[in-house]
Each structure stands twice: as structure tokens, then as C-alpha cells.
Image 1 (cartoon, rainbow, N blue to C red):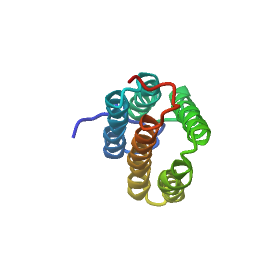
Image 2 (image 1 turned 135 degrees about the vertical axis):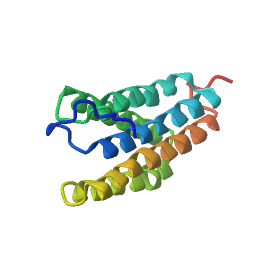
Image 3 (image 1 turned 120 degrees about the vertical axis):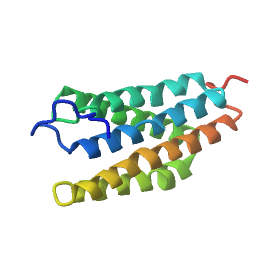
Image 4 (image 1 turned 180 degrees about the vertical axis):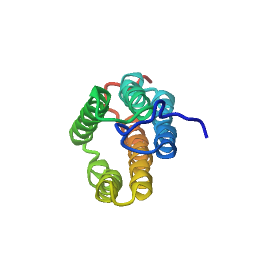
Length: 153
């Protein structure tokens, strides 16, 4: 296994294997980037691109530095933007159903943090996976709307 969490010390929030696992699941954001580009929505592809960059930057060495807060801020901004778009274009199924899995996965992972770090790691990876599935679901529905301005036809 590659030693990703370089200079591992007590400041790193997980061990090297867990860091590397979450680093790898961060690449799921690229699927959202490519899906938005495939569905001809160039503007919205900037959102998962920024999440991807902040996520790999953080999970390379996850600690309580500014990188953590940049990643969290980036994710919160993109979630807020997606909620706004879903509400504005009445894609309510995204709001109610597609966000329930990543939010539940995050809460369970947070519950297991410091109790069982591998369970916490797996549930946090669920956030990466389920959130990107929800993103693709939203992009697909936006693509099929006549009045969504960001689609390039």
C-alpha cells in the first residue's frame, strides 16, 4: 500500500490505510464531472471539480488544518447550490430521496468515529459514493428540462 498520509503522526485523523481508502473514493467526484460534461452542462461541472480538488487535497493528509475546513466549505457550498437548483427547477425527488443516503451515511460514520474507525471510514466513503449518484441523478433531470438555462443544446 502506498504511504499516502505522508509523515503520519498523531495529527492525522486516521491511519494510512484509511486515509488512502478515502482518498481513492474521492475520485468518485470525477464521475460527476464527466456526467455533467456528457450531459452538456459545462457550468455545473465546475461544482464537482472543485469538490474533487478540495477532497483529494484534504484526504492526502487528513488533519485539523485549514485544508479540512476548505474541503468542508466547498462541500457545503456545492450542497447549497444543488439544493437551490433542485428547488428552483422542482426536482424534489433529489432533495428528499437522493440526499437521504449520503446524509445518513455521514451521520452513521460520525457516530462510529473513534469507536470503530474502519466502520467510520466505510460510511464516510458512502457519502462520496451516494452523493455523486445523487449529483448524476440531478444532472440527468436538469438536462431534460426545457427551461434550464445552463444546458448547451
